[in-house]
Length: 148
Image (cartoon, rainbow, N blue to C red; front, side, top):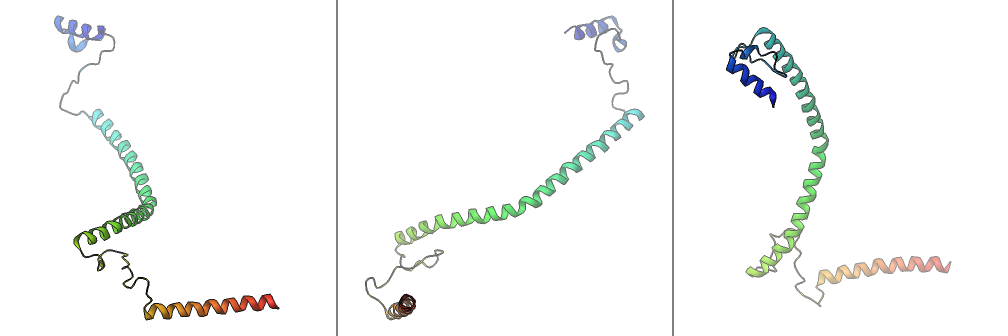
């Protein structure tokens, strides 16, 4: 508080720039708007230090980006998958609302409902018979092992 008062008093008595008796006094720049050689050299040193620190930071950022870039791709894929699965149900509901339900081919992963519920078509019956043949063969192998 007193430092400001001391400077004001020096200004009033006409001793302002040479106010050495005031505690903490810093003389104003004797060449305002002009850089002296010592100031220029100090500024250049500061720029070198700042540049070196900036490069260190940029290198850290670049290496972090290289490492996290792969995880961003994996995360992006995961988020897109979640979004698509959420939209799947919405897409089918929208098709039902507009009357296009059984023919909802534009919805990703859409499986049309059975057009003949409770009745087997020839392709379904043939596939079922093939499955029964495979199951019967596996059962016979197991029974033969038990018998021997």
